[in-house]
Amino acid sequence: MGLFRKKENRIDKKPTLDEFAEVVSWNPQWDLGAPMPQVFSDGNKTYLIYLINEPDPNWDGTNITMIDNTSDAEYPLALVEFNGRTFRFGIANEEVFSGLPISNKGMEWYSAHIIHNSTWIKELKSIHKVHPNYSEDHWKDNKHYMLLFHDEMIEIVAKDYKVETFKTTFEKLGMEIVKRMNK
Image (cartoon, rainbow, N blue to C red):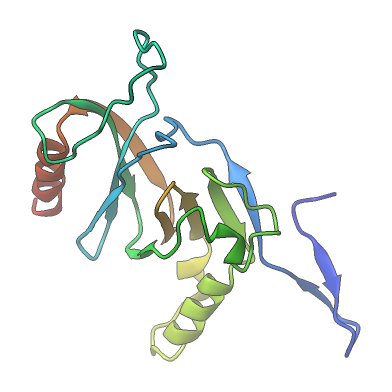
């Protein structure tokens, strides 16, 4: 089966393309229990911080390490810089992922996805079509990304992204983002 799934429309028999999720490789993987994602945006780019899944080699399985994003402790953190500004954050947690419209269309929990035939991108294009300088070319490289964390999710329409890793505090990495947004 190819990347696109066709569906027959029973009224006029024209094939239509349904929205569906494709799981994509994402590195580094976020912590499954407490990824603690944070989102920053300046109207041009969107930044995402999350705790990297880095198992403690000394963990004996008896105690759980509590993560405190307000502490001075340094953690392995990822900083994702999306070349896009339209995002939705929060929305749903793992208890309600099955209620998402594409939950049975390729979506996997705790994974990163690209949403093909995105109804959200179609909606955004429809809104922007009233602009006198609207161009379909503006939208050709945009992708709808969806990342499902434990207690949150982020959806973003972006042309691309890059990921950097740090061993630092949440506060220091947040301040680095503020510097980047104000250069």
